Image (cartoon, rainbow, N blue to C red):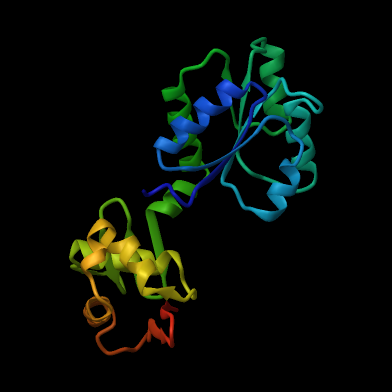
Length: 228
C-alpha cells in the first residue's frame, strides 16, 4: 500500500479508542504505533522517525499538550493532531499555541480523523514525498504508476513498475530474490524461479538505463541485488 512507509504515533489512554484509531489508520495503509501514556514515547522517537502524532490531551502523568510543548522545546517538529474532550475556545487556543497542528473534539468521527491525517500529511509535504520518489535520473509517481527518466516518460509494465518501486524504496540495501518474489510477484511468486527474477531485472535495466550509464543494479553474491 502506498502509505506503508508513513508511521503514525497515537497516544490515547482509553484502550478501546486507541484500538479503533489503530485499526482505521491501519486500513488506510499507515504503520501505527500506539501508547496509553507519554511514557516511552520519547525513547521511541529517538529510535524511529514517525511522520505524524495523534495525541490525547487528557493523559495520565504528563498532559498531552505539555508533552507536545516539551517535544517542541527539545527540537521535534513532528505534525500533531490533538484529541480532546476540552472544547472551550481557550483550550483550543492553548493546544495550537503549544505546537498542535490540528484539533479534534471527542466524540469524533473516525473517517474524519483519517481525512484530517491525510490533509496534514499533504500540508507538511510528507504525503507528496510518498507519492513521488526521485533518485538520480528517475522519478516515479506511485499513484499514477508513471516513470520519467531525465524528465522523459518511459513506459513500464505493471510488474516492471512494482519491481522498480521496490528497489527505490530500498536504495543501497541488498535484496534477496525471495524478498523480490514476495514484494513484486506476491502470491504468484512461488512459480517464479531465480532466472525469471534475473530476466525481469535485466528488462527493467534496459528500459531505465540502456547504456548502463547510471549502473543502478549490482549483483550481491549469495544474496540477490542491490540498487544504488
